Length: 295
Ligand code: GRG
Image (cartoon, rainbow, N blue to C red; front, side, top):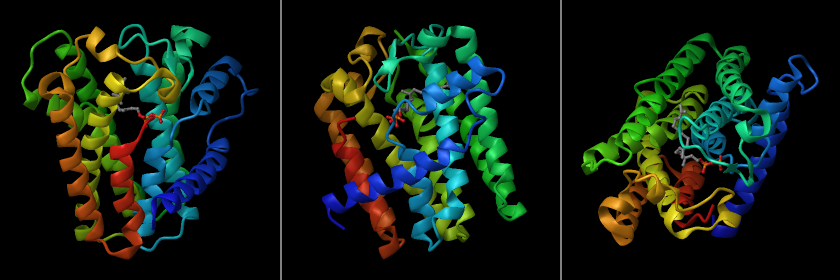
């Protein structure tokens, strides 16, 4: 599979996911309309759909058909969208733009944005529980997603990220933040695809480590894009990390040092994907994609 094939692969998967997402929320005109409109607004504001694509790619790497994996793919995207809405709030990063559009609270107000995030988080677990997967797989998938989302995952990472603002922190703290704030949901996406795709323990372990490495690389490239990217490509303002004195890899290691670290994580991810054999080729290529991404 070459770069152009990967682009086509990502585009096809994105289209499938966007179709499935349309059925993943109550319609906009169902009361409370404003809440549902806010949920639709943020979910369909764009987005690369990286995490749901990873759910599908992990399942496919183990020989699963795509269709049954779609509800789990939607669940991680709903949960991810909740984190973006809450992260943009004035009490957190106070951002005005996301995915090229005004942030949810700018359009619907803070209270509705908080509730839209809450409802998206809850909807993620509802979808997972209703998808008709074998019950033991659902329980394991719910557990992994809950662990990734809670105080030992995303929320914990976000808490330390906020605490570290304006402080001089060691690289271990930055690692902790990245592992929890970013890599945990990426890892869980891989695990969900693996669990629901019927993977064995050894395969799940490889997917987990792949997700961990890819997630670290993804966050480092996110930091680099904040330094080197631009609004039109990213759909959000840049230079925000320096402004908020965020603890980041580029801040601690410099741009070149951060790029080197990202390359190391991607290389490790690539090798892990290759260990799963030819059906995991998209996962191997996605490790390269993360390194070269511009948005
Ligand atoms: C629980 C409030 C709360 C936050 C958890 C995930 C998170 C911590 C905050 C979201 C903001 C953020 C910058 C997270 C780091 C992960 C990341 C790079 C998110 C952006 O993901 P992309 O680039 O976004 O995949 P799109 O829009 O393409 O889906």
